[in-house]
Amino acid sequence: MPQLIAMIIVVVGALIYMFQTFGGTGDKIEGIAQKSSVLTEISNVKNGLQLALRAGDIKAGTTLNDLAELDYFAAQMNDELSDNNGVPTEFTNGKSNAKSENAYSAISFGGEDNPSMIINLITPSTAAPDARPGIRVEFTGTLSTNAGFLETQIASDLAAVADIDRATTNGVHVVSMPTDANEKDGILTIYYKDLPTGFITE
Image (cartoon, rainbow, N blue to C red; front, side, top):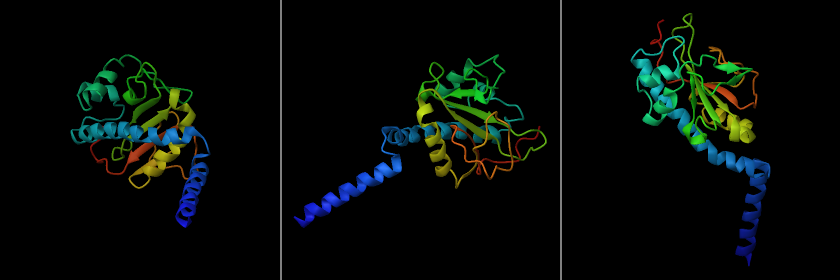
């Protein structure tokens, strides 16, 4: 009997914790499941950027399409980006154009047909050649419901390895992160600390 009571207490405690943590809704629980795929998509882009930086193939204004043409990403990603030619408009009212030459519509979340996660490359200007490029992430479409939650989770998970600009909207590169921005609009730019610097010279 005491064991049964103890078990009930543990189960009730776990349920209370879950409801406090996730707000008692399925949305946040679903967001936790989505987070793993989100981090994988970001990591895939980062890996390509590392190679491109060391090869000197990222300059001010370089797009993801430029890097896809040089096969810096996985084949499916390169294919997704390959038809994004001739669409120079990257952002409209702070939102990414999924067909832009600098937009990767994550395959895990609908691709170009139904984009729910869009990634952009944010390059430094020629005035800051030693700055690291950024990876702008925007949650939209079917991820809109969990956009703020996912932004907060990703920023928290990557805080030790990256500088996070949560005030970002239109893709402007920043060197000093805003200290008072804790927005939950589903848009953030990630500046990984281990991306090599000194390779962007023009």
